[in-house]
Amino acid sequence: MVAAIAVADESGAAGLTMKAVAARLGPYSPMALYRYVHSKEGLVDLMLDAAAAEVPVPTEPGSDWRVDLRTLAVDTRGMIKRHGWYPVLIHTRPPAGPHLMRRTEFMLSVLVDRGLTVPDAMTYAALVDRHILGSGLQEAQEARTLRSQGLESPEAFLAAIATVHDLAAARGDLPHLTGWLARPSGPTVDEQFDLGLDMLLDGIAARLP
Image (cartoon, rainbow, N blue to C red; front, side, top):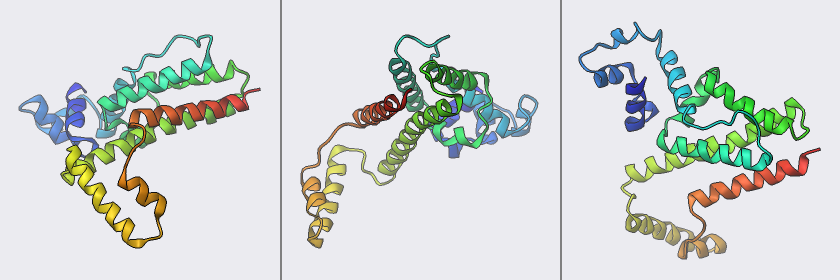
């Protein structure tokens, strides 16, 4: 499993094959791996739960539900930054690993303790997770696109922005977009994540009994 995580960390979800994992382990054939896991899906199950185990989950909710959910969200985001394959693969398998289920139970406990029904708590927990996983997916894809297009350096990225600016300006009917492209600014991706998370938590707070 450690070898599989290393392969996925380096090559992404698309590069996770039994052949690649076997090569990582040494002179083994892919078929030899099936003595330890029944299928690639079983290997992915183990990987997902091992990654989830990196996220600290308290044994019980604390006194501030927002702090509980925010801390869990930020820690999960940190794990996803280390394992970019996680948000790609998490929805390909049922979340049946012990650490995954413990994490979900904690989120439900935090919200039920605030007076929500279990169905409502599940809905709100899912919304928070969608923000975490969706942000992770988008950032991972953006990073792949920047690499594939040779836009990793700030200079190359700004040159690409300038090209888009010229296209927008030539239309003449996109004043706000053209203005922003002329002087691109705004929060970092981490700050955007925090802003979105705060908006979600504010929305949940407004719906608490």
